Length: 95
Length: 306
Image (cartoon, rainbow over all chains, first blue to last red; front, top):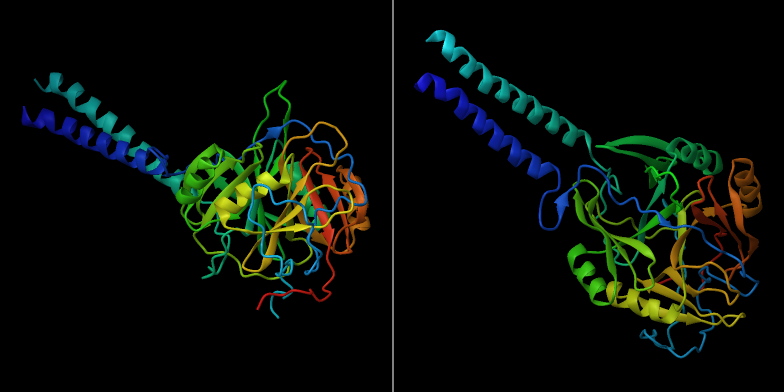
């Protein structure tokens, strides 16, 4: 009787191990898990329209110290007026 | 008796063998899956609010590799990620982004796009702050041991972005070399409200700059450097929805635009001078993913933080 139950116990133990292992590597969890596949690939809604980028439509950074816009600051706290507007890092890698 | 026992022994042993092999193969698959670190060797720096990474989602990985390799000289290294096809893009040996192949179902119209990653110190805290301000979860928090912990969100206008606490720290603030990402710009309906959202989540300093066209253009800054701009759509009507647009530094916008067309890309915005005096343009790769290119000469910046 003992001899015939031992393999079942081994099987069940392995099943438990495999289940625990799967939980650890496949991202089972309430929040924050270890991903096996990569699910950050997100397609945007179809189509963009970039029309209307006239000469005054500027999206890039300045060189620093640009004139402030003077728009009423709705929704955000503007940096103090005395602070110059920032630019990109000027230091090149390795210098 | 022996004859009766044999099947009893055989069945559990077979099950055990199957489980064991599953265990081993599962372990191998997990071991082979690893998104690479952003910085190697690791950096001890952390720059909350800095745009630190970009991942492209595309239906045709090979075509995307041909395009970006031909245009910028990027090289690619395949990364096995379970069922996903992912390639790490590098410029002169430095990782610049990732390309993920994902099929688009027949009949579906979806836009291939670059996903913008913003550095945070604590993904859960940043996610919580964003949700409180009206963001939605696109892909919930995941940990990739070498890369870090990340989540994909959409802001109150629906622009999708990712937050990432990099396991290897954040790169030091150097001027991007040609072929590397240099700038990011959010196109939105209401730049001021969107700037408020990002300021609350990432703690940016916000600078409203003067514009010639009446549109609102706002600079988001951290550590004394400009990190991104938030721009209201041009007044001209069209099919628009809020989205992030990332720019790669180039030596000559005109040359890149010509090359992109030859490689199967499209010009969305023709080259023109931007605020800093250099030329910019907006292109789409063969799958339609938009990205910008920007010239930036090494002229002295007026305001370099101490």
